[in-house]
Length: 284
Image (tube, rainbow, N blue to C red):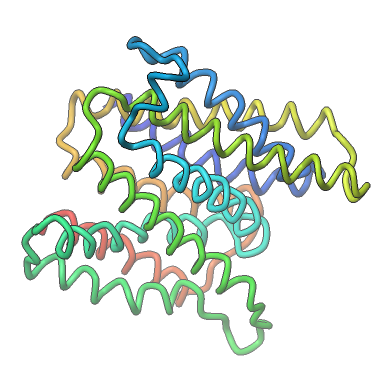
């Protein structure tokens, strides 16, 4: 249970850190690049098999890992923007409800059974999204508060579906190496964009942003580590719903206590429906 609680705490801390990055005037891209540098190094160090360039080039999952590298850094950048623009709670709901995409993909690609509870959970998710993002009559609706979480939902769900596809078709005992390659590709992509921005003088290298990124990398790795440790004690059908529910609930609490942003009754109803949807999908 301790590992599960720590997984929830560190997963929520990623969103909270992104929110503080805005207050600390941290450059998101520099921080994310530093984060992936640390994550790639840790993943590579944790892999115990052969990991030369030739070994990696021969892996059947390499083409998918390149695509995942683009998706990972894109979604992570959206996490940063959404946490800062739309809020921690809304971002948590969007990311955790993305479980719908691999569930639907499981029906189509992997022949998994479309049970009544799973279909009901997907149906409940639709009003959950609407209520979570709905603003009151006296609140100005910003398109970013809808588009950013929506893109996170689609991107995070696509990530999970591709990871599931890779695990189903290619992966054996290469998880740490796969993650290291994905993180490395994400770092290369981010570094390339960062160098272009520096050459165009739109941004200057910032030690504070790099250090914040290393902190983010440690939190990100801890989240992944404790999630894997939790798998030793819980079935995935139990563990993932508990983590998703815990992150959504804790993020809503953090939104209010740390940032003083009170969710409306409508938004709270949306979060409650999101939790119910996650439970229904998991029970199915």
